[in-house]
Image (tube, one colour):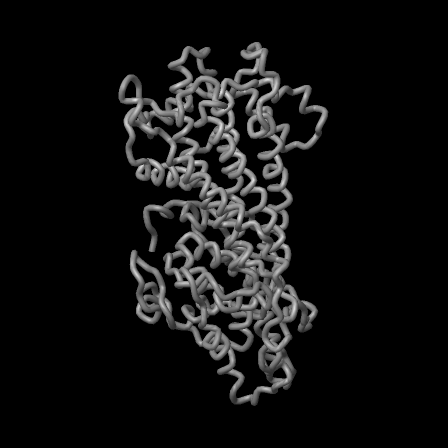
Length: 517
């Protein structure tokens, strides 16, 4: 089944070759389609691993999670006649997730990450299982996955159990706009419930795909935020009658961090820094304006490193044990440990929250007539006698402060809160999934701050023009025109929540992405 989002879209091929964050985001947003490789070499590699496992079973080989119990129960031998039942017990008893359900976009990202890992060809799964996963993505049949319940080592066991169960026709899915039982939906897309082979439940569940899928989405949102925060800063510097020469190219040449240099370059372009300084009495603006490239630049500089961590995890085989089909070895290890994603997300959320704090401080300057250099109090557009009863953006600034405080609160690193679980078998765990969820929450709050700053920019740029400023630089004039198309000037007090939600959705949809060539 195709739909208006994917019809004619270029496929992302799963063949064990390297995928990028961009591939995950495109699949998660239904801009591209998933396609399992049909190359004979790929098919043969997958089948070779499954056949090797079958031979070991015939020869009475001892394989963790196949002929033994799981985790601390690895010393328990499974009678041969019960081996086939073991995979179904694994996903059954892990059906204990809680909290919100992952969104459709998040769920697709999880499915992509799991299919990418299993396509490495060292998990011992059948080709049929990979096809079933591919078809969930093709037909947009999305397991309902509770967000909470993973400690991020031994993999995302509980949330991924919902994927395994759906492949077997159990639990619920989101399809065609509503929740439906998986057993009813699978036949409607031409699939039959799987009977999992030995090791397949472990291969599906014993990995880092929930945290990794969420991390891919978080990275992309943070990358967008760098550009938007830079453009908003340019608006705020101009509206506050600030000193654009704080972003001088020679000045930034003496501190060779590429992130701040890039942000400063964009600010110079936006502010047309060839013009002379307007206010010779105020040589230095406050830090939230003067040091904006340094704050935003930290996030900009972190992103390439974080991309490397996330994409390496995305392209890893991260279940246990791994099945080497070429060397015919069973390799027991700990690749399910999500420490790199935990570090990436703890780092990301801290850098993002600092951007929220920066914008919050900029807004505090703009709305305060003691610091905004001639703009009306609270950026109210009301004039004459009615100015006395209008309060402009007073409440918006309070909300921004609240969202910023909550974002900062969430920056406590999740990765340091390892808990010993499962009879001390999982005695050091990553908490990567919690870190990823925290990062998404910080991004959500920061995007709310950024959306509020778009309202403030619309207001502040227009009001600065009223008091006789120099003409707006071309880039900011174009941006103000775009803002004016989306947001009416606040002359009389009005509820701004509808505007805010529309702007937040626009951020998610890529409407507000300056500096895109």
